[in-house]
Length: 182
Image (cartoon, rainbow, N blue to C red; front, side, top):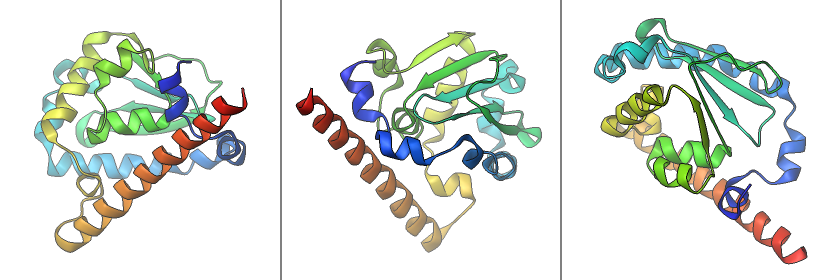
């Protein structure tokens, strides 16, 4: 893993605190959220075309679980599996969680992360291109996925994006300390 990836990885002590079971309750919550989002913004899912029913395995390399996503509109599913599960998916996207979140929130350019080898993509690249284009065109905020509006949306966006920025800073600081010790 390169220096950029190290700066985007969760610090080791955080990884040790997160057993795989921590992610399992997320599956049903994320499924409901994604289905609700599909009802509010069906055009985003329509942009996926034939890849709407594809399986996207999202593997945060610094977490002990993976997200198995089928973004099939109002029938969308998100399952959480142990990172040791076999990878049977149309496309597999791997990288540190902060990098993956940065792609979704627009902080990072997915192409740049790919070419710097911070993230890797295997499988049907046209499926990931369709997903990337749908996400970029949507200009998503956390409140969109949560279905919030008005003041609640503003508060959620500020809190969530601030938390992600804080986590990115902590990851970069931990990587810098590790580099200095080496």
